[in-house]
Image 1 (tube, rainbow, N blue to C red):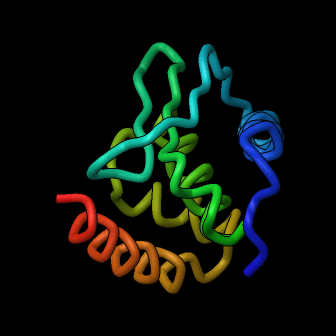
Image 2 (image 1 turned 30 degrees about the horizontal axis):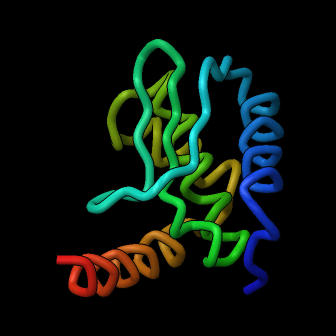
Length: 110
């Protein structure tokens, strides 16, 4: 599980996925966030938790694709799950891993 080199490498990966998914990113930030891995707004703003930089690239890809898909699919329904699977394969393993990491993270920071 190789971590990201820095914010710039992570941001480059966001833009790479945005191109693949045909999503226009208006602004992109990597910053401390207390209770979530990322957020997006309907006008193209993306925020990612800086803690992701210390996690593996597979985890980063999961969070990146998860958020970018919300630009076209606003919920976690059947279509969203199908698209996640199409782009990342068995994403549920990473999803479960992230939930455990977030639980431990919020315990440390609250």
